[in-house]
Amino acid sequence: MNARIFPFVCALPLALLVTLAGRFSLRAAELAVGQATVPPGAMVSVPVTVAGASGAVAAQFEVSFNPSFVSLASISAGDGLLGHIVDQQQLVPGQWRALVYSTTNGSIAPGAMVWLNFSIPTNAPDGVVPLAMTNAIVARVSGQQVQPLSQIDGALLVSSAGSFLSMTIQNGNQLQMLFQGIEGQPYVFEASTNLTNWVALSTNTAIGGMISLVETNTLVYPHRFYRAKRLP
Image (cartoon, rainbow, N blue to C red; front, side, top):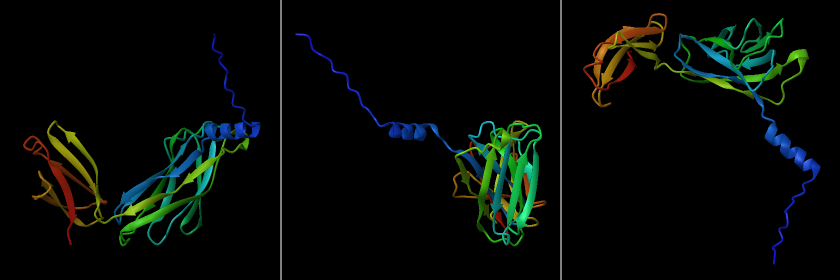
């Protein structure tokens, strides 16, 4: 006897099919403020990035922060802009509006659309300063808005401990270190092979908020750890 095969058919309501299709096909574009760690008395640039907004030619947003802890010096164009114009306006202390547009309908590339250039007072306390994004609009040609659009907040971490910005090998055996600290403040730099015993390498003062130092014993130690301590 031949077995019969009965096909299984699942019939879903049209409204449910449309809903499911929308959930799987629609993914929100993003306009996001970045994060950065910075010591008091320094300046730092925080990116505003755009993603998932193909064909976008213009954008507008507002960023808010506590003006008692940081100040926004300017908003400058990022690598994602090609021939775009960046307009900026301080609405009230601690709230700025940025407008990005192109007179030739040039597209905004993914990545850093603009940079928020912040200045940190020398007496700013350690802590997190939220950077809130509001009223964001990303538009294509003819003013068609990119929707849905997610607005993602950022933050500044103000830390008097300072931070190493880069470590690069030069001349084959020299380690070039760039440290960001508090302007005019002295730091002692130490090294260790086991994170227990530390040896002082040098004491430097931050000029322009930066300290550059060179480690010449990279061939002597198979591995080494470094740290910086602010002196009173």
